Image 1 (cartoon, one colour):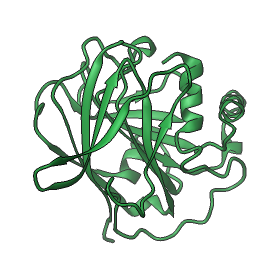
Image 2 (cartoon, rainbow, N blue to C red):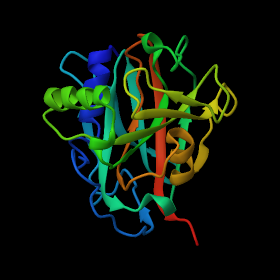
Image 3 (cartoon, rainbow, N blue to C red):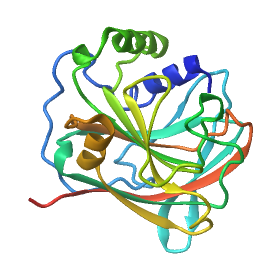
Length: 248
């Protein structure tokens, strides 16, 4: 994606599915409660979010796969778009997010450290609320631009879990477009391809590592498989997204 499209992406992502306050303090959050965010659950409210009329959409579809319910298959062909849901603002300091994902192959040439090759076969994204007034002037201007482009309020920060290549697991990759998006490599390389891989993340720990501060409330979740930069094809599958709560 080019920079302008990426900026619009951050406005669309959970700007329509789970908008932040835009200004002022974060909204009041509720205590963590376990929740099944399965893609087949109508009460969760998953929606497809195109990025731009100038972009091809990734195709998202529910597919049957053995005894695993609610498998979402993302088929990207020189494309990028999201599948997202909002959640009631929840205190993120005790939230554990878990899911399963699978892909048969990595994307040749993709490298999320390079904006011209910033694609991934699998991404899970978490949006956080916060006070935009605390950001530097340049960052507030980027948010204002994205809001004008999308017509929606934006989340304060985004944590993006990715399956990548070239970088070790645990690496934090800052976005080249905004300081309020951080990518965290939770899988890297070809090990584990063609099989379901479980992932479980403590959101507060990951946020502190990426941003160096405590997170605001969680306000939304999304997945994305994208190949618009490399012009490649990729298929990613997602299942079993759940919120559980850390004890103590």
